[in-house]
Amino acid sequence: MRSFPAAADLRDDTRGAVYVEFLIAFMPVFVFFLCLLQLALLFSAKLVVEHAAVTGSRSAAVVFGDEPGPYHEATAQPNTMSDERQKTVRGAVLVALAPLILDDTVVAVGVLYPDTPGAKGQPKGTRVTGVMGSGMVRVRVEATVVCKIALANRIACEQFGNSQLRVRTARAESVYPYQGANYAYE
Image 1: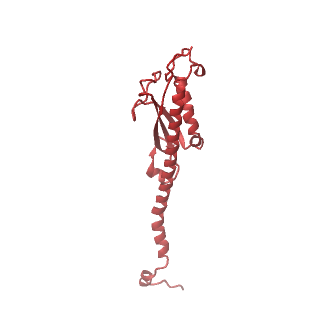
Image 2: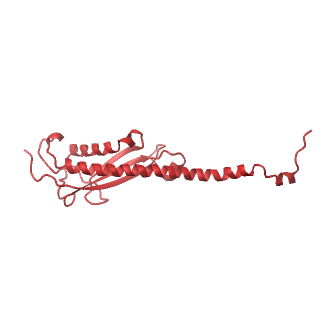
Image 3: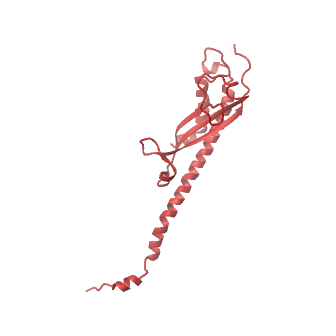
């Protein structure tokens, strides 16, 4: 017959204490590491969004003053933000964001043309010269970045609508000198 140890013997037994302490300390440290990893991914996405804003503003400085031929416009209206010209600038932004779009890190992209920092975008068909400041074109890129690291995404990110996705919005603005076209194309 097997005998069980007395309660006093169990109270003094320290075998397995290190294992229990490890289990208690491991989880907070592990979650902290996951949060650091998630923040690093968010900051790298922010850098790519900033690059996309610079690319968009450089593209806008060229496209908005360009001739109407490549944009299939009937009238020669230089210095305007037509739909086709905005699609071209958006295409440049999407090319800059392509690595994040292809791996589903970025799920939505907005391109705006505010006249002052932090302002709302300009309406379509607005003339660029005079509206966007003295000789400058401003482009804001807003990208919805998916948080992919388990546990950390619940701490660092918000829920995206009714879906299970957790996201953050990365925003960047860039200003580029705009010389425009001082003449009308024939």
